[in-house]
Image (tube, rainbow, N blue to C red; front, side, top):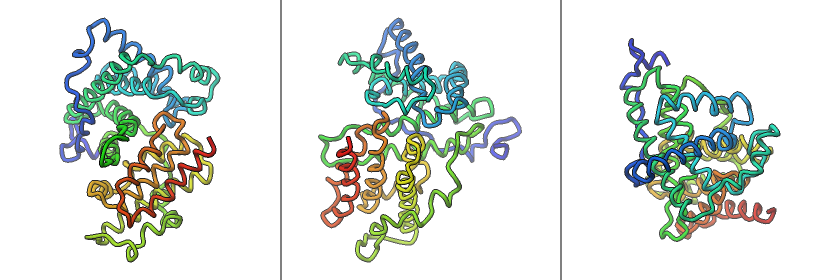
Length: 359
C-alpha cells in the first residue's frame, strides 16, 4: 500500500474510493431511540452476540485464525474506531432478527460453538415491539457506521486502514440481507443496491488492505469462458438482440456469466457451503461495474443473469444471509421480464423447485 500513501502515511486523495451510500432513510442514531440505560444494555448484548455467535457464521470463521481476527482483534480495534464498532453492532442486530434457520454446519466446527449454535434460537427476539426496536437499531447503527466511515476514509492512513478494511468487510457481509421483502411491490425492484454496496466496499478494500482473507484463485479461474457453456443461450445475440449492444456490453455479459457459471460449477463439484457463500456474495465485488449499470437500465439479459446467479443461493439458503433470497429474487425478476424473455427464467425456477422437492 506504500504507493498509495504520502510521506506522512496518509493516503493520496487521488486514490480514495467513492464512499458507500446509506442503505436506509432513517436519520439520527441510537441515542434518539433509546434512553442511556436501554442503550447500554442493548449495546452490551449486541457486542456479546457478535463475539459469541454472529462471527461464527462468517465465511472464513471455521478457521481459528479468522475467528480470532473478528472476536479479538476487530473488537479491540472497534473501541478505538467507532465506525467499526457500529458496523459490528449493526450486523449483530441483523443476525438476531433473521437467523432462525441456520444449521450448525455454518458455525465453527469445534464442539463448544456447535453447542452454542444449537441454543441460539433462544436468543432471538420474538416479541413484536422488541423486534421492531431491534430492526430500527440495526438501521441506525448501520447508517451511523457508514457515515463515520466516510469521515475515516477522508482521512485514511496507516493508523485506521485496518479498521476501515474490517468495517468494509462487515458491511459487505450484511449487504445481501438488506434486500427488502418486496413481495407486495409492483413492479419488482431487483437488488441493485446490494451490488452497488459490494462494489463500493470492493473499492475501499483495494485501498485499505493491510490484512486479507483467503482469496479465490486467479482471474482466469474465476472468469474462465468455458464456465459459460451451460448458459450459452443467454449470449445468443442474434436470436435475442437488445438495443445499443456494443462490444463493451457483450464483454460485460460474457465476463459476468462466466463468473456465474463458475459458481454453478462449484456447486456441481460439491464445494463447501462456506466457500459457496463467498462466491455468491462476491458477484457485486467481482463483476464489471458496467453490469450493474445494465441492471439499472432494466435490460432483460442482465436481469436473467442475476436470476441465474441468485437461484444458486438456494443451495445455501439455510444460512441467514440467504434464507428466502432465491425464491424472492427469481420470482421477482420473472414478474418484470418481457414475454420474449420468459424462457430465460425457466432454469432459475427449476433450481428453486429442485431444492424445494428435497426439503
